[in-house]
Image: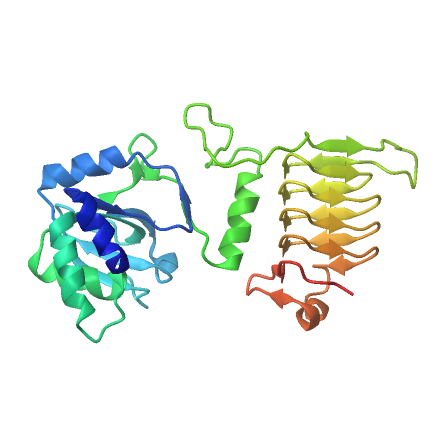
Length: 302
């Protein structure tokens, strides 16, 4: 943010909304803005309720009964609980709304200090001491539970979020007509599924519980619980499960792929097996702590 102060000052907005680029959620920011104004806040942190045992991987917000922020700790070993909810912690979503001049003043002061120049580690803890910061609880008041939010900055979390989206009834629904998700879509022909030879040993092009984008061809292969980006081809007798395939990936005949993320422009040779022998996979690829096999963009597999 500090590196863009010139552009912010040029536009001179009264308020500054700061967002992260690796989170998945749907939020009406006007509701957060109304909360910010009603509290007379200098800064507002969007936060969700989370079980305390899971909260240690995130920035934890400590609040009083009025939702005023009285503490903030990045990835604490023992997260502070919420008022009245001893088993719940309030976790920062990485979404901040500030009065512009207040946050710019803090950023310029921090620039001359020997710090990490980080919102969670430096900016917010410093502002708590002298400014009114509040936490906006991103909660479904009807269901009395946190709304959908996922941090997909880690490989395992990215894979899990994709599996959730491809599930039968996802909380984050791409097909919700009330709240459509817009994105750039290059022009490709529709996805195609070919070969329906149901006899033993025959080819059957099929996808189940999956998202298959434009330009994909499932040519006698099977796809299940997976997400396929545009222009992916799965060839005959191949089997793809619990995987995320990026653009222009080709899966050769008789391949078996499970719990993998395969980046763009990778051609997987005929008969390759990935995801069924983790120790063998570690010798060739990166494997996350959750056991997700990751193949980088353009890698040549032999």
